[in-house]
Image (cartoon, rainbow, N blue to C red; front, top):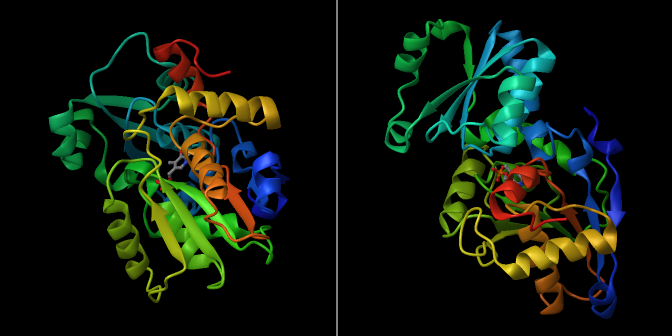
Amino acid sequence: MENSHAIPIMPIENEITERHRIRLRLKREDLIHPDISGNKWWKLKYNIEAAISSKKTCLLTFGGAYSNHLLATAAVGYAKGLKTIGIVRGEKIEPLNPTLDKVSNKYKMRLIFINRTAYREKNVVELLREIGIEEDEVYTIPEGGTNALAIKGCKEILNGIGDDSDFICCSCGTGGTISGLIAGAHKKKFILGFSALKGDFLINDVSQLLKNEHHEHTNNWEIRTDYHFGGYAKFNPDLIDFINQFKDDFNISLDPIYTGKMMYGIFDLIDKGFFPENSTITAIHSGGLQGILGFNQRFGNLLK
Ligand SMILES: *Cc1c(COP(=O)(O)O)cnc(C)c1O
């Protein structure tokens, strides 16, 4: 799990890639671990090291009710013998959904549900006081896991990709993962992100994250803001059909929140001639497959 070189990179070939003479490959970070998957492991790796070396006994973080980050944090904490606390946005709904059920019952994360207004104004010190946890025991990780140590970890996703990739593609939520890829990649490579959220704020967020890294300004990256399908966790039948067809064709699952939208965008751009002929594209499968169960429960088994 700790060696990104060992992660398989699989060819994805079909009529569209052949017609446009594109070599497309998928780096299977989703195979790292069912619950600590994809980019979330790389975002946590150095944070966990820091928590342990500073003798913290508890990880605290934040997320929505289906959060890949919350589950990954709970699972890593459990494996490393650290307590975990998750502050969940929204009311507690019972029975717990499959994500929170695992987080709470399998990985023993202590969950605190707070409503959306309180979540926005959350005061962690006060929350900790209420539940009787000493502040100096706690290592806090932001929602989505993005901080400087996360960016350091995400640079390691580049391991094994090789020099022949012209484009590296990833899905973007907070922009931490793409920041690591941009900061770590050779300047001759182009890093293309696909925003899972509506709006173009991520372009500024990523510029700021890179500035914090003292990364010199470069033009070898772009974030597409036209493949969000209506916004975070929104979808339409086209996206669902695409993900199911991809599963049939390649026997690889994509999640409907992030990687499905990225892969849809990549094929659409290939078809529109965005990538020059003979380009090699490596897409990052950043995981998130744990969310499919909850998605199917909510929306009626749309995904295979
Ligand atoms: C969290 C997540 C992302 C987004 O990563 P950021 O670093 O927040 O941009 C992409 N894909 C999957 C599967 C994720 O869980």
